[in-house]
Every structure is written in C-alpha cells, then in structure tokens.
Length: 379
View (cartoon, rainbow, N blue to C red):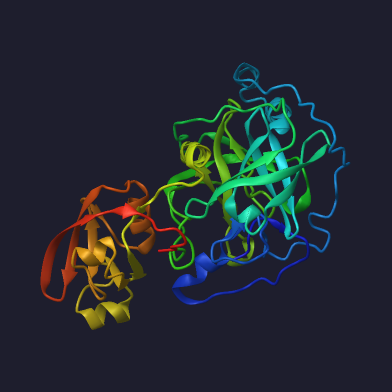
C-alpha cells in the first residue's frame, strides 16, 4: 500500500489481489518511502507527482522564537469557524523532512517536542522540522514505537503553541479538520466529518500491528499528511493522521487516524522510559478462509486461525498450537486477525485473558498470561 508520506521521488503503486486487496491499497500518510500493506499517512506510494514535497520553506533554522500559543480558549471561541480554527491551529502543526521524503507532526510540548508517526521518521536519527511561519530547524528522533506507529522528535525551537489533546473519542457525525502537508503542500487544511470509530483495516494484520482501533474520517488525507493533526470544531486534537485508502481502490474519502488518547498514552510512555509496553500473545494469526476452514472442519469466518505459535511464548505455554481456531477473547468474538490485535491492544503485560479455542471437534477454554512484547518482535 502507498505510504501517506510524500517521498523524495515517486514510488511505484503496488496492487494486490484476494483477501489482502484492501490492506494492500491502504496508504500510510507519512514519509518513509518504503511501501507497507496499509499505507500510513506519512509516506507515499500512491504515485504523487515528481515534485511532491519538493517545495522547501525558507530556511531560518537559527531562530528559536515561537508563535503565539493556540490556547484552548482561543480555539474554543472559533468553534465552527473553519478559517479561525485553521489560523489558530496551524502554528501547532509542522512538516518533517527526512532523506526519504516528508510527513507531518503536531507540537506536543512548548519546548520543541513533536509527535508524529513512526513510519515518517523510520530509519532516521536526524530530521528537519518546518513550521507554519516558514522557519526550519534541526530535529532529533527521541523515541519511537512501531506497534502504534508513533514517534517523538525533539526540534531545536522553544515557545511553541501546544494544542489541547482530547482524551475522549469524538462522536460519529461531528466535524473534523485535517492539518498537514499532503504531497508536500505545507500548511494544508481539509474538512469533513468523523465517519466511524474503532476501525481496523481488513487484511492489515499480516503486515502491520498499527492499523487497528482507528478513527475514520472523510476529511481528505493524502501522502504527506501522516503524523499531522485531526481536530474537532473546538480546535482540539482528536487524532493523528495515519492512513487512507486511495481512490484507485474504488474508495471515496476513507481516511484513518490514531485516537488522541492513544497517542498521548504512548507519548508519555516514550518520554518516561524511551519505549512503550504492549501485551504479547506470541502467535501469528491468520484469516479463516473457506479453504482453511474446510481443512479444519470448521465454519468459514468462525474465528482466527493460529498459523504459528512460539512454544516459549504466552500462547504456546498455555497449550495453543498451530491449527487452533481462536473464537473469542474475554467474550469478544473474533472473526478477523485485526479484531484479535484490537482486543490485544486493550490489554496490558501481566494480564490474564480467557480464550475460547476450537481444535477439531473440541471446544477449549484456555487462560493465557500475557507478557511484554519482546524488542524487535513484530507478532
């Protein structure tokens, strides 16, 4: 899938068939330049023009002055006034330039800390951060978390306007603004509504752990938006732009964002310890297709099939093995691998979860003690 960041040069658009078609079409909106199944909003594989992201802002990296803060009061008085909302929040949204392309970011603290997507800065140690007033400064990647696709960048600038991050989920139907740098067009605003909550991208589990439990919006998201802000009509950040499904797949305005509460939780963990902890099950989930279901003698879509299980991992120690079908976790029905990942996202290392497991003609109740995800593990 095309990443939603804007690459330094166009990347080829990959197509996919079968069950993975939708996931392969999703484009991350950030800027890593390396295609991933769902495309994050920061790196782009959606065939942007050759000049995408190539229009540099004036470089005045020596300045450390900040724009006037976009306070909650100021943002609140602009409720429903789109031009005023954009004017208030634009100083809090930045463009992040890497060797591979560009993405977006949101001010997390006045002392220069920027929140963005991990796929925007992937592989980079030093970046350049561009602000709405045209200034560019050096930035250093402080910490990142691939599981949630979030990262922190320390920019060499202070006095920045930190926006309000909303801890509650928005309501479906309420207005939404997306601010970022799609295809290198810095300081771009698009508008729409919140289209859905708790969305997971079908077919993404085989390639990414991050595309679950997302906010859906029809406010246009494009390559380069990754890591930028989704705000409500009160000027509060409700999400961090993550991915979109491009028109080439038949989609119309299908964009996705990481909820602000998730972003803040992970950012605080990264600040405190340099890493984020995630519950680990220790198995590879797969879609229960008609062919696999027939082989196992179960109904298609009646659960998630275990393709592999680490014998020394939590699931393996609990007796789960390849070929088992996971029907539910703590009473929540599982029909796709993405649902399993979404349920796992709600748990913490050290939690014990109950799984209903189908093994041939047997129905088993299995208790699994979750652990912390080992470093470098992508399952």
